[in-house]
Length: 390
Image (cartoon, rainbow, N blue to C red; front, side, top):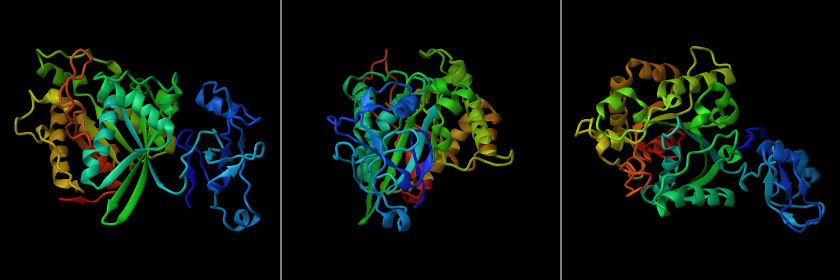
């Protein structure tokens, strides 16, 4: 069995090293967990004791991958199923080490709409896309369930408001904590389950290599990346949209420097040679494509919804890729495409709109998502989780 990767501190360890935490609130051995508090950057107060499970001599000697589903607290003797990372004491999923896990980071500069994109994407997966692929999506754990409901779903789908900007991981440890969703696909009786470990990156953590390497380390350990690009931060686009209410330029949200830092981050961390490319799938995704409708061709494929009925439509993906590549070259010159082609092995260009129409004064009048699922479906196909057809 391959090592388990903690989705918080990214340490790797075998199942034999997993710890448990007592969940009995009446246990007399509750106390301060200095290890946990240190990694979280907060004081969690009195919490359950962390301990090693009792494993039989046979399993410890001959079945090293064995891990009991439960363990008895040595103080109160109550059973607990809370599995803990031995390094940072972050609570692991109850199926750690048994289900396929894929870490996907959603990144981009400030104000690209990453949180809104995640909120709408999850709803699409739970509903229309789930039906198309005979799949079900569920949050894993109360932390994910509550965070998604309160910070993502409620503002947009109940209050019709934009989500507050994600705070830097340096001031809010929640930003460095993933949301975990399980996708279960039933393909003609063959069930396949994967845990998607989603990170919502703060745009300000993309401002420098130092910030990315400390506050957004999950980018390095991700299995795939959805990289959102804000067209309203491109000078050529802003000039063509004269007369439209356009937000001010954000210096650290320009696409090209972030792409350069993304490659440099991997190059430094993994000792990559200059001729090597990043091999993980990266979906370079133009966000807010609805604002571009006045300046793109009326016959553009971006005006229309995608059609992935149980499989990834490769013809549609390629059409979008080719068209956006041409637009980016027109707006940013050859430099952007040259950077991507030179440094990334598996990549595609996509275009999405989370709402289908720009919010007015921070209020969302209607939600008609356009192509939001395309980047993730392509990634799932690259990770051999769904099939593709031309």
